Each structure stands twice: as structure tokens, then as C-alpha cells.
Amino acid sequence: MIAQPYPSVAWYRDPTEGAPPMVHSYVAALATSLQARGEPVDLTHLMGASGWAFRIIAHEDLCPSATSVFDWGGILPETVRQAGYGVTHHFAYGEEPRRELRPQALAAIRAALDAGSLPLGWDVQEPPEWGVITGYDDDAGLLHTQYEGVPATLPYDRLGEREIAILSVIIPGAREPQPEERAIAEALGIAMRHARQEEWLERPAYQDGPAAYGQWARAMTERADTANWEMAWYYGVTWYAARWYAARWLERLAAERPALGEAAAAYAEVRDHLHAVWQGLQTRERLPAEAAAALAQELRAAQAAEERGVTAIVSSAWHRRAP
Image 1 (cartoon, rainbow, N blue to C red):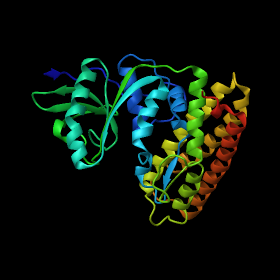
Image 2: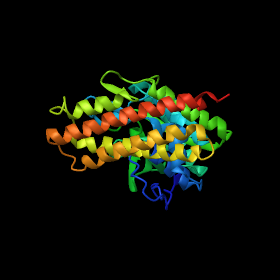
Image 3: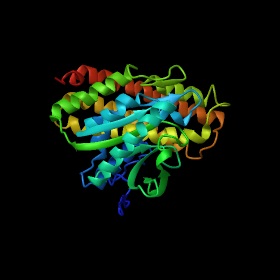
Image 4: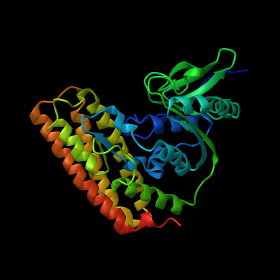
């Protein structure tokens, strides 16, 4: 059987004025999938409710893997559920588990596409990021895929076997909305667990939560000779975008929940410091020591502001309100 690729799948771009680029491919691919089936997509809500607006991970040498080194089995489906949808995750490490799971994952992909839902797939084309699967061709044994508007194909037997061999297919399901207050509390609980480093991570080479800012600052100063300067811009735009949405989501909530006003102000300060860092890394080249030191100072100021934001959320008690 052949299911033709969806002809008009547009990679999601936030139409909000002033919105930064969304380069975190998992969130962008999820937004693309939901948009393609006609769901209303509000990236401020998606980033805030999922907790991604509050995450930050940094490697000691600015390895780009920092944006994907986390608990996939827990966090990936949690993101979809927090957005208000059911989810199925087909996930396997290891050569034999991937081989055994592949037929089941392919069957689920076909069923989802036949039902009008675009699955998300890890490393389904170049570069090794999250993309969407837009069609399948059983006769040719090919999946049709897309990443940032660029189409490609992937042989069935290469699912989970391309550059970074992990089989992970996320299929968003039907709407399963939570009560608003519970969803807010769950999201802020995620933010606090991340800040306290309670999510799995390969430490100490990677650091998350407020400690990530110091790791990032040291990479550009004390470890400047080994830092991946070409990827420093990627860190800048990824984590600036996260805090742009964190501040916007909290400001939206604080309009009706004044107890979150202090947290919103703190995260707006984090956003502004990270904007300066992102702008300072636009060359994607190693910075002179003085310029790197200035950006490291911005990162430490961002860390201090974020610590105040975390304290404010704890003081508001909103993160404990989920039943």
C-alpha cells in the first residue's frame, strides 16, 4: 500500500511578533504535527505547559548533544500529555531491541498516517534531529519525512539505524485536556524538578537547571580551547528561546494569578541576559577572551535571576497544587 506524503505540511513557525527561532527540534516537530492535522497551536502554551520553557542543559565543552541528553522514555511522552493529547511512544536502544521493535513501530506509523496524524521520528533524515513522518510507500519500502521544510525519504530498515541509532517514534493521539489549574501546577512541578536536578542526566559532564549557566560560562572562559564554538550559537538561540517562552507564559498566568508575578519578572530578566548572550555569539566563531568573559558575566547574572525565579515559584506554592 502507498500513502502519499501530505502535500501541504508546513514546518511550524511561531507567528507571534518578536518570537525567537525555535530550533529545539522535538518541540518544533510536535507543533508541526499538531498543526498539520488542524489543531490550534500556541507555542507559548506548549513550551510552558510541557516544562520545556524552564529547561536548560549545558555540556562542559558545549557539545550540541546537550539538547537531547535527557530521559527520553519519560520526558518525550510527558511533553505531549502536558500539551493536552494522548501519546504512544515506540522507543528502543540497542541493536536487538531496535530490530524487534521496528515492525511494530512501522505498523503504528502507517496507522497514524492513515488516520490523519503525523508521527514524530528521531533522526529520520539529515541532520540527526526530530522530524515528522509525512507518508509511507510499502512497495518501495520507504518513509517520507520532513525536517524544517526539507523533504526526504528513509528506507524502512533504516528507521532507528541512521546516524544516531535510537528508535524513537512519537504518535500524538486524541485530545486529552487536563483541568487548567492542574496543568499549570504540573508544569511548574516539572520546572522545579529540573531546577533541583531531579531529572536524569549524565553529570558532571552535563549540567542542568541553574548550574548549567556556570557550566556554559566556564566552557567559554576556562575551557575555551576545547569548547565547540561553532555550537555556542546553538546554545544561545535554544535556551534564549526557552526563557522567552517561560517569561511570556508566566506573564500570561500572572495576569490572573498575582502570586506568580515575581517569578514572571525574574524569568524576564533571565530572558534578557540570554538575549545578550545569543546576540554575542552570532559569529559562530571563538570569541576574544574579553568578549567571552563579558558573556560569561551575562550567564552568571542569568543564573542569579533564575534562582530568584525558582524561589518565587516555590513561594507561590503553585508547583504543589496538582492533585
